[in-house]
Image 1 (tube, rainbow over the protein chains, first blue to last red):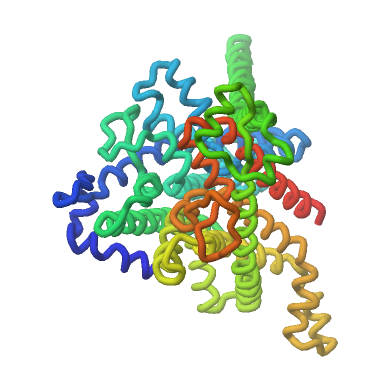
Image 2 (tube, one colour):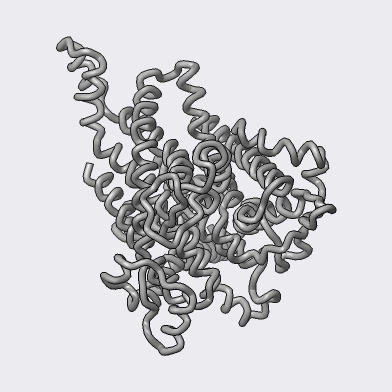
Length: 258
Length: 294
């Protein structure tokens, strides 16, 4: 961590704190000017969008596993498949997104040959589903049976039990689960790099192309040296700090519940 | 209760059960969408990649672009395989395990034996933070440590170091969690017999928890096996089989990335991905089996 700071010093020395808010990324020698804003914006937009897309899916899956079909063989199989989603390497997601999802989105009329924030968010959403699902599934299964039985004995339907008993008592755990999976989405590299379009600008719309902090490092590291290298390392440091804060918040909520 | 009231509450009940049923259908439907990608991805990989998988694929190095182009124009299979990737992946994963497993297990035992102490809490928090660090940042760190200072160039060693940092927190955590589940009485029985403390750890605690440890290690392996981003910054890739840890080395995910950037190699992408997925899922399922059998 110390060496990250050390490597980032030249960039911060040249650009100062403006590095974070500068929206230029100009590698022309002589006029070199680097700023992290396009990538910070791209990272947060894609990850937030991924979180929103994955929310209904992983919430349903965790209800399916932790409530409706809890303890059955079907839930075991489905649970295993959701876990396997976590095992697929990032680059395979990228390939699938490139060769399967992208043509589909082009047919639906997406601009930029299907590259962009939206495509990357969908793949990211699929990638974080297993984390969000397994965390909220665990919390939902932990809701005491007495609470649910009390509600049932008052004549509540299952839907009412879920939204009036289970969700409120598991709320903070579920939120923590989503925060942690958001942290995961922030740092994903390969799949995003292959799908986001890699343009170094602050994305103008949800369907435009962009770049994330992780993907700009992966893309430009090979030819980088000097000030550019230092700027990339500084972006890495920022990414580290952001994910660290997000994870700390998630862990803190979980700890407070215990 | 008069008839009108009766009817109202009856309607109300119908509405409530209807809502209940619809929510259930929606949950089932969305769950089906949730698991569909895994089926689609595996199906796609098998459908596109199975033709290339053969013994030659495992023992040969990749063709150059021209060979691949000629073969594709003639409608033949692309010759060659990914031997350099497979050996590179094995080399780096084994080295990463050698670095991470002893340190991880020892730290896990330390955390377990020193519950609630200050230094142990700090260690646990650092390990938790490490688990959340994006893999590409780990690649950067390993680049700054190893590539710039030790091997003076991209190397397998740098790749292994970044992978081992990734694996470390998983092993620490699974060691600690496993040891916590072992009944205190077993440990106390050994101590009561006058067994020295280090022997209690080596002969009683670790053997009892071995299946839990193994699960953690296998899950860690399956995670680093498919990692691409940190290797791009550290091991770089190489077109020949390389066992020298100070030289650039290829890996299966790195080769997939290279094939992806070369339009003539498309067929090789699918078969290498299939192979990689098979390895990852195999490790994943084995570790789940071990966990389930205890």
